[in-house]
Image (cartoon, rainbow, N blue to C red):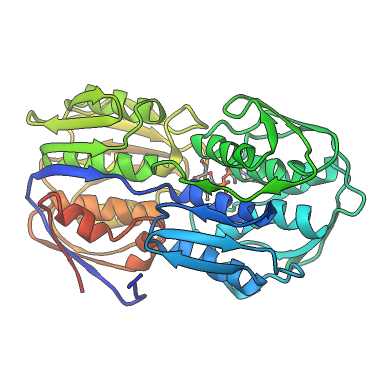
Length: 422
Ligand code: UD1
């Protein structure tokens, strides 16, 4: 890890991308899996974890709790046997929304926890009411104060939960909590994201009895103990999507190793319609683009398997340089068009109708500019805009991008992009 808050990226646009790359492991799978490793009665060995700030922070939070963590290359050996209580580091938790994923495992293990309302991104309100309601259904006592929420699970019992929205985080918390809760817990309207499935696969490898992951109904039969295991979380479908769009935007040809077509179906459909040639062979995805990009009329984000909100700003940038008009509807978060003003500085034509809808009219070229990242995925999108802009683009606040992308400049440079970190 060698990231600093003062880092900036310099991107000189106009280079085609070419090459082969192995996509990093998923941030959104690794974080809850790290949390769930607290449930193991034994050591957990996590392979090939991404070298990103969110993982570094999660490791710090676990270490402050008292876990013994050894880093071996990109692998982590986590031994949480010596943790005695659940005193979280509130300052660290504020920096990272993902600290909310510790709720399920800590509550299962220590029966009580006090959380600050989690921080992390500026993309929306991101309340935790669904988590709270779900725990209350399992007879967990929840007391909400101004800055803190107390959870007490001494009288918890298995039960049936219906989520009002298929929240990824709430599903992951309940799955972790119920894995060792006596009896049968059922989650209706559960999230179906591949990262939820990966967490369930990890827990099942540890000895949990979780059925229906990837569907709208997950059933968990509580077991007494979970054992330590070795596990490699799935590939990051959002980073994979970012690389496909980067090649679509710059032109060229890319081969992605460890790619999963099913998890990226929606994006691949859209890129094909926009003029990219895509070939899938086993776990290798090849994308090339040598004809001009054409826009598609409408892109709408939604819960999996719909188009992911985490790729919304990425596809927005692509639409900015495609011929024609695109309406982009953001259905999940209420503040996910933070990059629009930055893109307008580059000459993009975007009308923000409201916080959920943008109309993009493609232009022939973007021009380089001095830009600021305001959130993780928006930051990566600005890098893509820089890759296609004429001249030298400077991007500040790179630490947002470093939360989820493993050395983005090295990754793109290896494909021929002209990009450096200073
Ligand atoms: C996870 C992902 C994030 C992704 C999001 C949606 C991780 C670490 N993060 O976030 O990258 O963008 O899924 O795919 O895995 N909501 C409530 N009340 C709640 C919880 C959520 O109203 O208690 C709302 C949110 O404001 C949002 C929607 O439900 O509008 C989906 O949120 P959720 O699925 O919970 O997202 P996260 O788990 O936070």
